[in-house]
Amino acid sequence: MKKYNFNAGPSMLPREVIENTAKQILDFNGSGLSLMEISHRAKDFQPVVDEAVALIKELLDMPEGYSVIFLGGGASLQFMQIPANFLIKKAGYVNTGTWAKKALKEAKYFGEVVEVASSAADNYTHLPHHFEIPGDLDYLHITTNNTIFGTEIRRDIDAPVPLIADMSSDIMSRPVDVSKYTAIYAGAQKNLAMAGVTVIIVKDDMLGKAPRELPTMIDYRTHVEKGSMFNTPPVVPIYSLLETMRWVKAQGGVKEMDRRAKERAKVLYGEIDRNRLFRGTVDAQDRSLMNICFVMNDEYKELEKPFLDYAVSQGMVGIKGHRSVGGFRASCYNAQTMEGVDALVKCMQEFEANH
Ligand SMILES: *Cc1c(COP(=O)(O)O)cnc(C)c1O
View 1: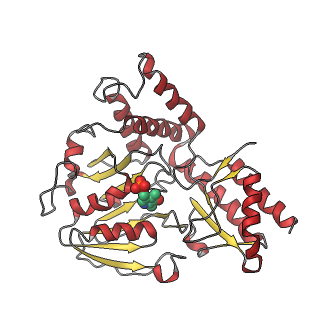
View 2: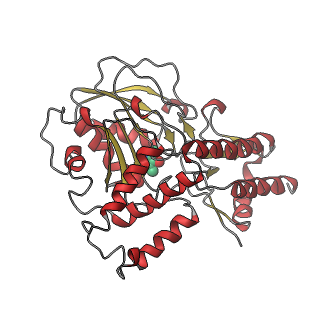
View 3: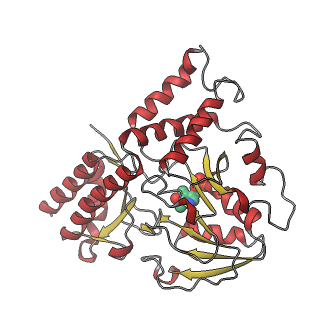
């Protein structure tokens, strides 16, 4: 049976990205060697990094003065690397969910941290709105998409201080005004590539200001200066990233990704709102287009397990909600298809008709 992949991360990638990466793993550019076996400094691999960087810059229409680097350690390492490089005295964090809270916790190792706004008291069922951003922050950190709770700041906010964003689960799903940010980072395994590489976009003239000595690997300047080749980069994940960037471009770029995301979300949220068995878990205005969370309506709570079993029997993969929300979560990253969304909607409608 055909499987529809709604995993939250690692998650669905375009089939051709996987196939093209698999080919290069078997025989890299006709060299008779695997992508896994060549030197990262080989003249063959440098073009992969160069093209991936160039495509990220092109797709996000990045202005001059920014660098793109590829590091290991996941977005979680960035929770400490960001403050190590940018926190001078005081940083502000907007607490919109599990990942935002983890980022805030790590920053405390480097200086004063203020929680500028939080929706923790309401179990993150909405974004904080109308909060004041102190003018004396070294930076404000936001999490643009809250993967676990299903809320999203799907716009580039104005901040009176340097803005830093964890875009792990919505990067490349919409046009972004990079000039509004001092740094953007994203673990690859949600919207970009296989796991193992983190993309970091940094504004060059903001580097080197932190009042602490940084270990070489933690200093972004090391990686900017060496073009992500200071040490051995994760070559296979970077290659798969390149393939995804080529795919995004061929599909029509981030504008088209945005259009598709809106189309998918409209249909799926539409069904959640229409179907008497289900309801969404977050305020409608703050709904994520990437991670669509829903639960059984209270009077149908006992149908949760039967619906999950039914959906699985119909080929749905990964729709069980995160334990901190319960219910269901359908992750609809760039590679998700309308066909997948329609198949899930059909499951919901059939299940409703039978109960
Ligand atoms: C998944 C995720 C992370 C953690 O990413 P790792 O690469 O596993 O460290 C951080 N932030 C957000 C928003 C995420 O979705």
